[in-house]
Amino acid sequence: MIQFFIGILLGALIGYGAYRAGALTRSGAWAAALTGGLIFGLGGLPWAVLLLTFFISSSVLSRTFVKRKEALSEKFSKGSRRDYGQVLANGGLGSLLAISLALQSDQGWQWVAFAGAMAAVNADTWATELGLLSPTRPRLITSGKVVERGTSGGVTLVGYLAALGGAGLIGAAAAFFTPVIAWLGFVGIVVLAGLAGSTFDSLLGATVQAIYYCPQCQKETERYPVHGCGTETTQMRGWRWLNNDLVNLLCSLMGAMVAVGLGYFI
Ligand SMILES: [Zn+2]
Picture (cartoon, rainbow, N blue to C red):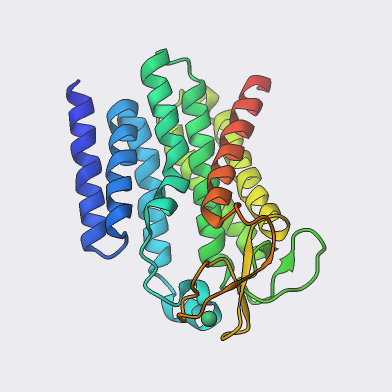
């Protein structure tokens, strides 16, 4: 019970801090307080460490190389405060797993699923942030066609190495709470889950994710209804309801499922 209250308090503190630091909108801060509180409060220290590893490493990355990234892509052109949709996309599944942990009493699978989900969203965030710095232009994951930087579904070697790093960091953090004898298998599962999740994200981005077009900037974008420049965007391809937040949520779900699936095999 004490852990639960400390968790809620910590989640609220982080949500408020991130709001003050300009990383979250007001709605994003509330969502972060809720998801953070549930994950810290119900999952305890191991879950808190994974969530913080994701939160801190992705915040640091989104604030590095800003100048270069601004020049390269519209995605980073404005002070990108995250709103509640983006927070829930990355932390929503983790909160549900934490609740299931509290209801079901620990059966181990929730921890593996949570590590896989966090590895997937971290891998995806790292790939998005660092992939832009690639010296070569991205290729569409489906056809291999060379596309413009920042195109949804475009992948680069740098992006893949970044995804590997992002998933690896979560795996390393999770290993602290895993018996030494199981390290290799566990970290391997988490890394594969992370790569699978971010690959799935790229696949959806190249195929069925709703993608829009800004007539002003003459660029493809994930933003709707208004582009960063203030112009209304029109739909170009994909399923209208499958927005970027949903794609990220599915990325974390894929990470969790792959981790649990591999966990059964090994
Ligand atoms: Zn525009």
